[in-house]
Image (cartoon, one colour):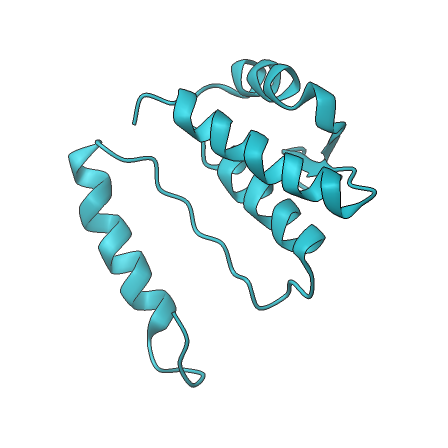
Length: 113
């Protein structure tokens, strides 16, 4: 969605998410693309958003992540301020970037929602 600043894009998305979340049929996640400048940054933002919004406990999520993305070298660290886990992907080239996107979509397909 593209528009001028302060036109209500994020509020509209949050409103839709609020109503869809009540149905519990979907896994919803939001990605702000503004800070991304290339495909690698997009893949990291996409993966982080997906993994930070999983319904499962942290340990279960971490195990699923390391299994699903093991060939892509996920980097799991903990935010020093909040102690919450953060995930990034070590991506070295365009071929690996495409493979990472494919793995993310494979992972999404394994979810029941």
